Amino acid sequence: MPVAHNVSADAVGLENLSICLALRRAVFVDEQGVDPALDADGLDDGATQFLAWANGVPIGTARLRIADGTAKAERVAVLDDFRGRGVGLALMNAVEASARAQGHRSVLVHAQQAVVPFYERLGYTATEDAFDEAGIPHRRMRKCL
Ligand SMILES: CC(C)(COP(=O)(O)OP(=O)(O)OC[C@H]1O[C@@H](n2cnc3c(N)ncnc32)[C@H](O)[C@@H]1OP(=O)(O)O)[C@@H](O)C(=O)NCCC(=O)NCCS
Image (cartoon, rainbow, N blue to C red; front, top):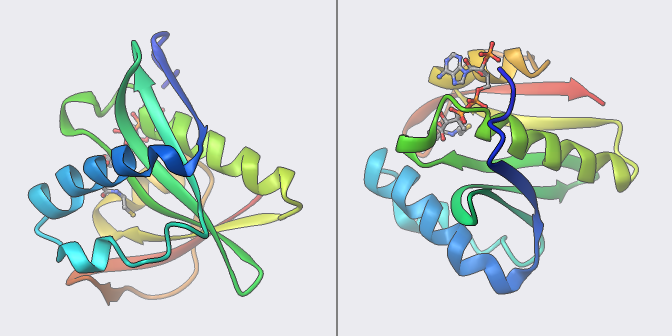
């Protein structure tokens, strides 16, 4: 699926963190019922934040966090009304480009079981059995850049 022509995604400064958190709250807390304290885990200041936009309106977010030397894509979220238009793809392209620019050769995700096919479509491979995170089954997946 190509990214829709009016969609863009890029890294943003921490002055935009409140927008990222609002999008995450809408998707993870309000839609999926995740504990807000688990979503806002205090690790955002040390991460690179990303926003996706449609016609200048923020519609998706993600963050890239380096943990123990590993590049991790986290908090990947697209507002329900805007899914299926390549927004998640645009976000992950931006995250991977940033990881590559920082010298990383792979990106790790803890993928919700339900969206494993999304990450597979982007070239990620599940490495282990499912495990629980925030009450939701997840798979650890990795992509070589
Ligand atoms: C997962 C999520 C980020 C995908 O975003 P999206 O903008 O809908 O994805 P895209 O439109 O960029 O899809 C890219 C490709 O993945 C596929 N895809 C996306 N979601 C999928 C799903 N749930 N199951 C199977 N395939 C999926 C698309 O069909 C597309 O493939 P194609 O190019 O062959 O047509 C979005 O559904 C979301 O925010 N979900 C709720 C939060 C969540 O679960 N986040 C992941 C946390 S690990």
